[in-house]
Image (cartoon, rainbow, N blue to C red; front, side, top):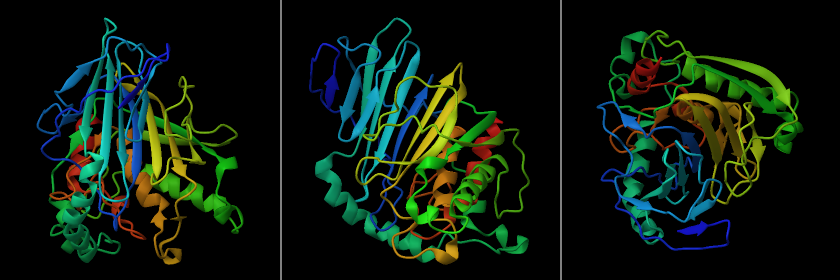
Length: 351
């Protein structure tokens, strides 16, 4: 890991231990994502477990505003009393996670966990069966009637992990100048993109599901129109500068093999700024009937990302493959767009 200090100091720190249940994505079922989350407390599971790595390196030479970089993950050291957590998902099935915390007394601690690059080929081979299983089951559940909903895996899996923050009301704008040419050149293409994002937010706040379960949460959302502003995410995947209090969603340049970056900033446990930048360089689609090949559905991918914004963390892809917050997304499918029981139970604990 490289650490950039304001005085041009660089250091290499040893790796921490890897969690027993790491989250991985198979190459043929990709949601390659970088998440940069600014928060005031670590993730907490549905059983009350603190999901932060316990293996920390104290970095007394770092100050708020300095940069920390580790295998594609880059975060700025946050102000006192805050934590930055970042996760990079690779297309070949591995992940890299980095967390930097600044305590109230100014001490900086670095938590490292994830897959070493040397492990990537072995992990890919071990995940091929998982990807094939997920594709064979098929996450498409549109049209399932109430009589069969109770037998669906997603309606019986109660798994959920939570972050500490809450987003009682999420108001966002769309960066219209970032729309990919594919959609700009299509009749009403930009409107279709915005509508896909609108539906993704609604899927979370309205607890959209096929389990015959009603909306039980108080979180709300509001679309404030288009803006000339861009999401506060740099092309190399950093959450940029200070938050402006305006949540912006749009497209742009991102590091290779990544799909999207989400930046959430909180104060006293509440979100006041939540930006999402979607990669220009990946193939996206707005309608299932138009999707083909290695394309991803905007609505499905963004529903997963909004789960993070509203405080949901990942669950295991191997044991909870049917839930929105597991990290596997197949091409041209809408599996993440409907919430599973665990996703809803997590939201209902918060709202």
